[in-house]
Image (cartoon, helix red, strand yellow):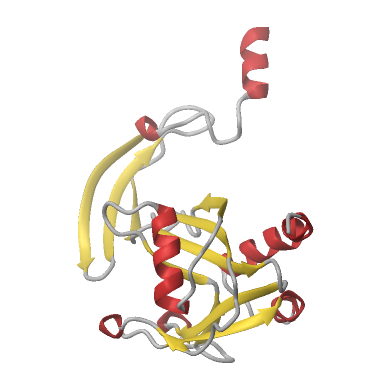
Length: 215
């Protein structure tokens, strides 16, 4: 390797050596088609030390991309969380009802910001003012193609509460308005146990003072 190549390599971000062209998709089979889809992939890919991997089989869960929005009232230092039954947590040792930030799936033609505002109204009856974009990430790239976009939505929490959701989607969503301090206690006690909550609240903990200084 030349000095130039070594310098280029040292400045190359981790994971940038390979791209989509370094994977050979041998076959894709649909195993299940429903609200979500499960595919079986037969593939091989290039190896870091050269050459190709042996052919392998992987199952991939196909989901719509998702959006989460942490609703934050700067004036009152309060957050809005929603509580609902989650089928994926049906065997949870405490409860399959989970406290979460507002979230929803991206439909064709929608932007992530549009989804954040729509879901805030559907799940919490809450208009959103300024939207602050936080992160976009894969929650489980080893098995799922879903990408999540996270926002913080600045709101007025006065009068919020009650039960919301769309009947045609079997939603039964209870709204909670909590002080930041109380919500942080719940997080530290393990009650806010999903990735969207954890990522959004750690962002808010770091940025809360600057948001409140803008009042």
